[in-house]
Every structure is written in C-alpha cells, then in structure tokens.
Image (cartoon, rainbow, N blue to C red; front, side, top):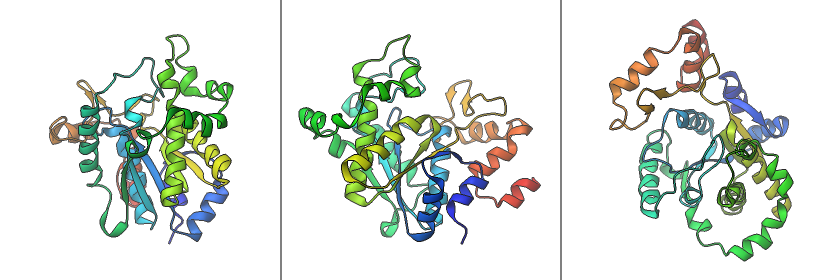
Length: 279
C-alpha cells in the first residue's frame, strides 16, 4: 500500500510539515492517531472545511485513526488566524448547538464504527482548567516575543489584538498535549493558516512530555488567481443543504474556472489521479 504522505502530496494537499522524513517513516511503521480541530463558529461546516475532511478520509482509508475535535472550549475565545477583526462572541448554548451540528456532518465523511475514529470536545478539559495552574504549568513554555512573531497575530496589529484572542494559541497547543496524553495522538493537521498554532502544540509536547509529535498543514482552497474558493454571493458555500441547496452547491462546482478543475478533482474527490489528469 502506498504511504499516505505520498498520496496527500500527489493530490496537492500538503503545504507545510514539521519533519517530512520522520513522518513518512512513522506512517510506514504504525497506525498513526492524528487530529483535526473544528471550531463551532457556525451551525454548519463549509467548503473550506471540506479539504480537511477529505484529508482526514484519505488518512483513514490508509489505516490511520482520526480524532475529530470540536471546539467547545476554543470556540469560547475564537481563532484570530486570518481575521482582521475579533470574532463574534458566542453563547454556551450556541457553541453546544453548533458542535452537535458539526458531529452529524463529520460522521457523513468519517467512519466512527469499531473505534476507527474518535469524536471529542475540547470543552471537556479546557473548561475545567484552573487559570493559575495553567499559567504555571503551560504558560512558562511560551515566550511572548515568539507568539507575537506568528502570522496570525501580526495581521491584527493595526486594529488591535485582545488578550482574550492572544490566549488562543495556548489553548490549541494544550489540546495537542491533552490528546497525546489521552489517546497517543502524534499528529495535528489543519489548514495552512494554522501553522503557528500547530507548531506551538508540537513544541509544548516536546517540552512537557519529551514526546516527538508532528504537524502537517493542508493548502487552503484557492482559485488559480490566489483568491479563496468557496464563497458565493450569499456568503459561504455551506455543507448543510438547508443553508446551501444541493442545486446551488452543484452549480458552484460546475461553474468553476477550467484552470481550477484539476485542483478541485484532486482535493475534493477520490477519483484516481490518472483519471483526474485525463479529465
């Protein structure tokens, strides 16, 4: 069987990786438990999440075990990555509702039978943390100057970055540490805008557990001109048929520019690559 790293690379998923040689070797040696996080900022996943779900499905088909993490804890803060302003604060009820919606959608892509995948909510541990204990245990592992160098924070200088959002990187890094301790998770995957947060988790595992873990980012869904794909006149291209009708969803992909067809077929379908190239 082909190494899943080669599959993801051939199909155009991989943007950055912490240690390609070691990770490829790990995929050959064992069934790797990995995770991708989804923050419940809405009551549906959208086309941008579709890339992550497909990468996760390829990994599962190759025999590895996904952890689907819904952000019942991180959703209370909101990820500043790629944002020019602060995200809308959600109520606990909104967060819980959105997490339940995500779970149903993810289960259509990932097989959770017989322990083949795990669904967890980071609210289960983040909401129980004692602030002083967290500062002493984890805060000492982060340097402010290193955090401020992260692209997700640099973009917010002019409009202002709240202390609330500044904690997001620490929370996401703590998730990786907790998942490694609980489930032996060795890899975090996410969109390329998550690189700084993923690196923070890799380093926190090394410092606290002396554990070798890895980070891998997927390319974001963009058009050939570099602009983000998955936006319609009405906003996001949702994976919920109530928010984006099947007809609208079909028409969106039917109408993509010819230059983007190969990329879409590679990333968003399971068609063999020979067939993708032929089409």
